[in-house]
Image 1: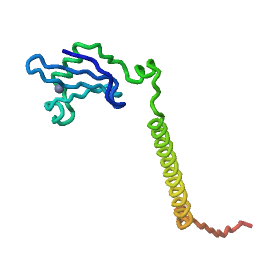
Image 2: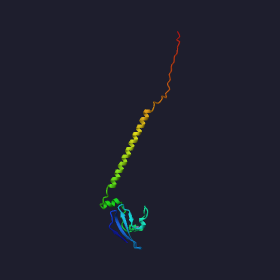
Image 3: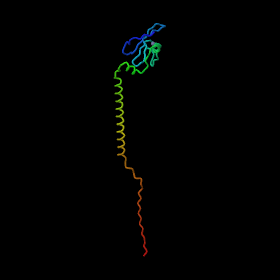
Length: 145
Ligand SMILES: [Zn+2]
């Protein structure tokens, strides 16, 4: 049996009490803002991540109309605004990363230009590979009278 209840804290968007028909135990299945599910049963609690849904979560998912659309769409439709902190942080981090990359690129370009200039200054003039021929001829020509 599934009974939807009001969420017990702001961490949850929906909560259900699931009563096991065999044991009569009650477990609380919860859905978080990120649309993931959790259960209060020991089988789910003590599983290591990534956790497959326990039978209570699976039961809720199979029997309750669970919205599988993107969480942002669901929240926007419900008029819920997420705190902009995360987005602002992401934008700031991205900008800082881009600026750091630019600084690195500029520094690398400067180093390359300086190295090229240093090499050009220190390089001796290349020796001439053209042989020089000096040709001198002297010829006496006897003219007939
Ligand atoms: Zn469970």
